[in-house]
Image (cartoon, rainbow, N blue to C red; front, side, top):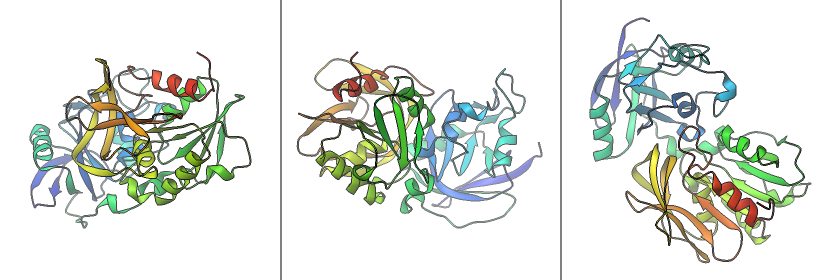
Length: 352
């Protein structure tokens, strides 16, 4: 690996010199941090990170290499850049097929080793997520705000995909879904129809038993067509579950509001309280926006134990619900996998 000294530049002018181990390409994006100790292959292929330069707080990254793409969360790397404290170029794991550096270079993603990621994280925590750019070998690029784009449209499937042989069909509106979400549905014996982000589900030519609005990147207000189509789904009383971005989309469709968090939730240990109980679940999360006003007819289902932000809504009468966290949680705790069973039972798709 060549010792190419490049830098991370924040929009406020702050510069941090680092050693390049990714592609010789300069890239801009929104700089965010994630605190997971493991799971970098899953994180950097998570579509919710699209357009973002990711700072990993765990110091050692790359030590178990890169697994077969069957274990990724999407077909490609989704981040715009990667910042780590210590990159390990000698991985040791039976699943490893290449080094992280090789993978990043193949997919054209820049990455820097900057020793003091603690200081970078404190800056983002105190000042909030901000625009930044990785400049490699002096090749400057302008700052670009990914949240001004419809990121869900960029990452969504372009055609309908049918998976599984189940008798009941759940439509997954793909705003940037993670593969493990599909795996969890297939494991429950369902037929899964993955459709583009702007699909009018009420006009599909097959029976729809339930709908799942997926996770995804960016500002939920940018997916206006999805919001309008979810209104039609709810009007038809089709059981609906939203996850992450899907939580925000369901809220907006029903008359609620959303807003941008200061630095977001990106970790594998976010504590969420089930409202009306003393139960607190550890959850995996990756989002920069949150639900503000709860829509009429719904109530808060979960709340964040750290900052009291909304972590889910549920209708008081019908099987319409959503969570801000990832119940499929790969990687991460399995505390909330029961959300799938709870929803599917309410929707009448399973009996257990």
